[in-house]
Image (tube, rainbow, N blue to C red):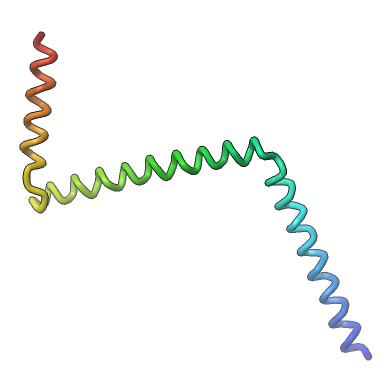
Length: 87
């Protein structure tokens, strides 16, 4: 029954690969401090990326004139900054 032997051998090889991958995952996730720090970096990256995307979207829409009032807000902020600097 060579077909059964080949099937069994392939199954054992597959299980050995799964075991190796599980050991690698265990090694990477065993340290809870490292997982916490990785989570903090991931969260910070998500926040910074979201802010950058919103700023770029707003800037692009203001260039097209689809967001009225953005230029007025920018001018008022510039005048406020100039007033603070002149004091």
